[in-house]
Length: 266
Image 1: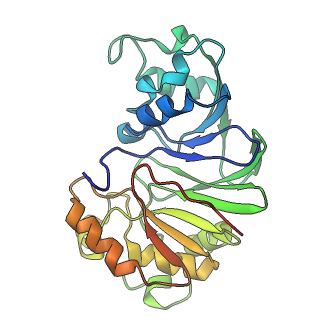
Image 2: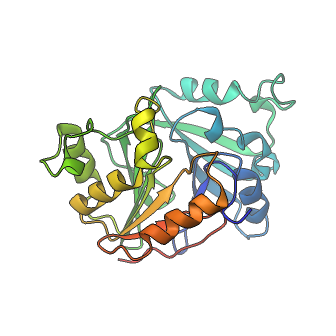
């Protein structure tokens, strides 16, 4: 009730730029309604991956039903045809009455592979392959002289007792992640579990706060947002998480709350 229960959907807004939206979890419904109240009629939408909790909101995202609204969709993949096919699974007349090809908005598709910087709507972005069953893409985005990262869904890039959290040198994949996040002012990072729960679900593709903090420290990140809370986490548990990390510095640690807004500063 206090922290919110929708699944992943994050809006980034640079000065004078169209919105940039990461993922279409169930939070996309409320975001879409709010965007209709703004003067712009275009946005860029980037998917991290196509597990259902990151896609469920797309059929209920109102801008896709507005004639002339430009929705530019970027998908991890190899071809535009593959990108269309992935979303068509959800808007196919069976799971939802609308078919992707019948949307009245101006929907366009492009694909992205990790490691190559690209531009969308005035933002400079880059992707990184994450550690998640079926694959997922993390992103950095730069605009207005600041740099932000959206890192969900991912398990740690080291086994327990190894790498950054163990006080050792980073594993090769941790080293790549640290380079990717270097220079970030704010990082939004998957911390679904507490550490003890993670050890029971190591293959599920999600992380925990201590690991995110260790990575952020190694990368020199100023601000870390703990994100993608466990569905079973209740308000009291999230209150306790916020209390525990409230005084942390280098990086400053914030627990994501549905509907919250924040300014990213260099």
